[in-house]
Length: 228
Image 1 (cartoon, rainbow, N blue to C red):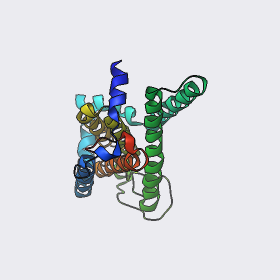
Image 2 (cartoon, rainbow, N blue to C red):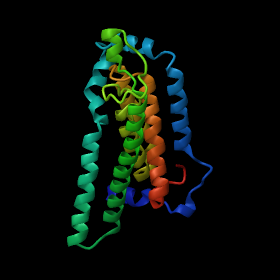
Image 3 (tube, rainbow, N blue to C red):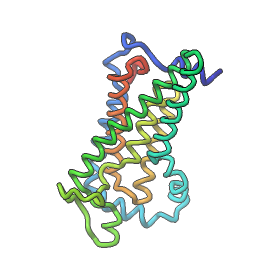
């Protein structure tokens, strides 16, 4: 019953949206600026993290970092959407089922649009991973090389988990700070574990925020809280 009430309360009609309260957009811009600033200290911070991988916080990061992987979230959203379609087909449609269907579709749409943009950036810019810095002393971008191994920037994990956080914030707006804090932590684990540079993570997070927000606003306005 609590879940049902939360889902039904999550969406707001377009006319109730206040265009002056674009909190998610402001957060995305903050992440983007931070990501650009981190370019100056990316190498230093990556080496620092590598030296501290045996610390408890970093070991905890290793245990939870896979929660930001894209495939499990994609499968979960797809299964939820398909299950609801079957229930609607063989039973009477209810407001709850319709909401679940729309939120699942919104998440899938966010993943698709954000992934196209993010992977296009990866291919065009071709940034080396931190491992190249550690193993061979190689750092930087290889523009327009079209080689998939140069795929550090931006972080796909960060993008994914922020798409999830935005949709979760639309479903349960009162818990939005929690979803965004959790997403930030999971995204940062990618840099803490030296899978990415911090700028990769911060820009990936910004892409996830912007694209999922715009996907909801344009494609699913009835699901979007006023403060988005």
